[in-house]
Each structure stands twice: as structure tokens, then as C-alpha cells.
Length: 445
Image (cartoon, rainbow, N blue to C red; front, side):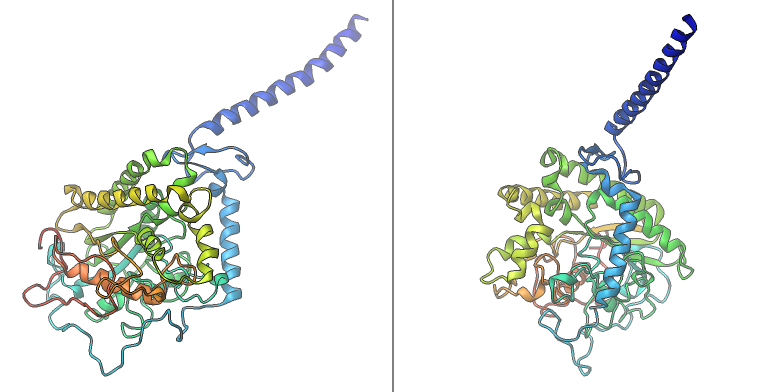
């Protein structure tokens, strides 16, 4: 009888021990789930009903850190891209810049604008001295939907048309920063060649990613450096590099309203990750000049509210793509988000002056032309919705060309005299001169 009772007790105790062990494991898992994680770790089965806090203090769903989700997203984009086919080669539409006839010369005299001897100082760079061009950023830098004519084409990235990094065609057909610099140095490389995602070979040194925020930029910059180091064309210590760094639109368009108390800390976190990214670039990219550019997304969005007629597609896409400004739940705070975005532009400018980011072989220059970007041109005050893509969030090819014109002008304008806002294409196109041949920095202005 005693033996039977012992066996029965063991049978009862064993399942209880298993249950306790299981509870303990789950408890540990729950505790660890409350800890901060980073964007490189994640489990699709966790956090379906609660949030985690990332290392960078952003509280969000863990699904975006899941490897299966990322692989599914990449696969979906590949299938989507192949089914719809390329759109970057379109030659007709109001969203395209007017072509410049072959008999019209390039606006600048390019003679003598590449140094006879490779400069040793970043403050003595002529436009033709730039050997490599690159970019980090978000969907405005990947030229998402630049040549789209329908909303179902919004995931096509026309990187070859991107204002600061696209190299498709020439300045006559697609005015971009690379197509301008190619007139001074035909051997320039690194620019995106055609429609592509950032994992495609034709993207080259454009590692911009859709929906990226300021906190993604250290990772973005590291990927760029890795990609450049793997390229046999790059002579790391010899070639002069130009990097355009524009970010911030998604922070306020589709992120700030979903984070816990984000309006109280977002500018502080943005400054932290901006400095972290620039320090990484300073320590890992010798012979580099960085164009630091504020986002035009918010100012463009506000300017469109004053436009007389918006396409119906705008009312369909903006509440989804830019839900913090146009979604019914959060749009009542849009003026606050606009002010926070303006604060970030000031932070960008202030950070660009920090002594840590300036030496003989590295410098950062704040280029403010996007700061007052509007669908209303500054000179005549007329709205031009053709600079916007079909979704009224991204830029059209014409909008990218107007942006390239603005960036180029800023690069040749001294500190304190840089223009802001959009002007009609080629209405004002700066040129280097014998007296002022250099790309302007804080030390040669």
C-alpha cells in the first residue's frame, strides 16, 4: 500500500514539476521580452499583442525585426517589380522634365574644373575632382514612384532618376547631381543606373531604403561602407567621395504619432543618431564631403494644402503613406509635428558645424535648399503639381530634376548665402568659376 501511494505521488509530482518548469521558462521569456531589443533581433511569434522597447528607446512592434518578415518583404518586392516591369524608361508625361535640345550647350564651362594634381584637402575640391558618388536616406533618395502613373506602381524605385544619386541618361533628359558632375568628370562612378532596390547591383552606392528613419542611418551608413569596400573600382585612400545624406521625412510622416510620448524625445534621439552616423562616416570614409540635407516631405505636404486642385489619388494615398499628418486619428497634431521637423532642420545645421566633422580629408556641409520646398515656385508663386508623383508624397522625375538643380546651386554657394526653396528648372543654375572653382565648405566660403 505504501509503495502504491509513493508511485501515485511521483506520478502527480512529475507533471507538477514540468508545469513549474514551463511556467518558469515562460516567465523568463516574458521578462526578457520586456527588455530592450535591437533592430537585428526578433521572433515572429512574439509581441503580437504587446510592444517592446528598442535599444534606441523607440517603442514599436517587434515584427519588423523578424527575419522571416524581412525575407517575405524582399520576396514580395521582387515579384512585384518583375510583374509590373520597369517604369524608369518612360518618355512621355507631365511628370517628366522638358528635354534639352542637343544644340544647347551645358550651362557651365567645364574646362579647368578637374585639378591637374589630386587635391589633398577637401576644401580644395573642384567638381571634376569627385570620383565616387553615394547616398544614404529614405524613399525620396531611392526615387520611389518618380515615374509612376498609377498608385499600383508605388513600390517601384526609379533609382536611376534620383536627384542626388541617379545616373540614368544625361542632364538633358534627367537632371541629377551625378549627371551634372559627369560633365566635369566622365569617369565618375557609384550612381544608380536604373530601376532597382538597394540590394540590386544597379543601385550601386545608393543604399537608401523606403520608410527609413534617422535611427536607421548608422546601419545604412555601415552597409554603404561595406559595399564600397567590396567594389574593386574603389581606391579607398585615393578617390574623393561625395555622399548625400538626407533623412527625417518618415520620422514625422509615419512614425512619431505611433511612438509613446515621442513628441517629447524625438528631436533628442534624432540628434543622437545623426551624430552617431556622421562619426561613423568620419572614421570610416576618408576623402569624403557630405551634403547634409533636411527633408522636404513635410513642407511639401503643407504647401499642397494651399494648391487649388489636387488629384483624387492624393486623397487615397496620403492618409496611408503619411498617416501622422493626414490620417484621421492623428492629423490634429500635424502642426506640432511640423514644428518638430523644423527643429530637426536646425539640429542638422548645428551638428554640421561641430569640429569633430571637419578635417583635411572629411567635411560636412548643411545644404538647406529643401528647407522651404513647395509646389509653389518662389519667383512666380504658381503651383506646379507636376513636380509631385502620383501619390502626392514622393517627387516625380521633374521634381527630382528641380531638386538636383537646387542641391547643385547650394554646393557652389558660400555659407550664409545658400538659397532655399524650389525654382523652375534651369532658371538659376550656378557654375564654378576661375575665381571660385571649389565646392563650397565652411572653410573656403
